Every structure is written in C-alpha cells, then in structure tokens.
Image 1 (spheres, rainbow, N blue to C red):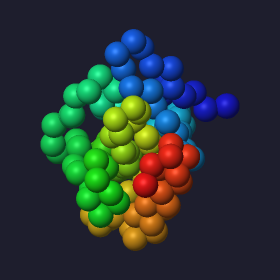
Image 2 (cartoon, rainbow, N blue to C red):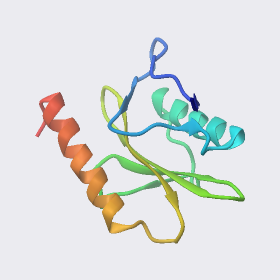
Image 3 (cartoon, one colour):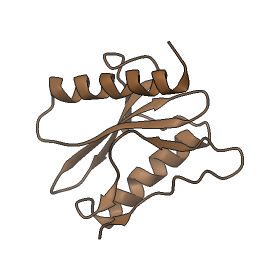
Length: 123
C-alpha cells in the first residue's frame, strides 16, 4: 500500500485539501518529491503562494488555478490546484514527459473544477 505524502486534515487557520480524484503517494513519488509537493500544498493551505518556478498560474484551466512543479531525475511531476476561498482543491497529479501540458490533462482539470463548483454550489 502506498504511503500518503500529505494529510487532508487542516490545522487551525489552514484551508483543507480537497482531492477530486488523485493522490500523492510513494511510490511513484520519491520521498524527497513527496515532501516537496506536501510543502508546496502546505504553503497554499496557509494562504501563501509559493514562488516561481515551482508554481505557475494556469488560466487555461480557470481562475485561481496553478501548476505546482516537482522535478526529480526520473520524472517531472505536475500538480494542478484551485486556490479557493475555503479550500485548496487538487484537480490532477500528472507525470509530465514534455514541456507542453497535454490537452487531455487540461480538459480533465476543467471537468473536475466544474464538478467541484457544482458541489460547492458555485457557478
């Protein structure tokens, strides 16, 4: 059974994580990559925005959506999140093999974003 590299339970004054379909686990993430990913998510949970190049806005998915970059020798990991007013929503975790974001990943993230907003009672 893979070990989870995060906790969905938020501390006081932290936004909780909402997982729309995926998780960050070891394997396939290495220990250092899972710790880095957890640290980036924790910054968002505390209301901070990590600095580039580790984080890039991705308006093609939606407003307040970001790509978190976790690079290892063996893999480039991308975590797509929505920074919502009440939570941090993980839309997808993707092992990247090229510089471009595959259109299928963008579509999947948009669909999960729409589903989250419907569940939340948003637009």
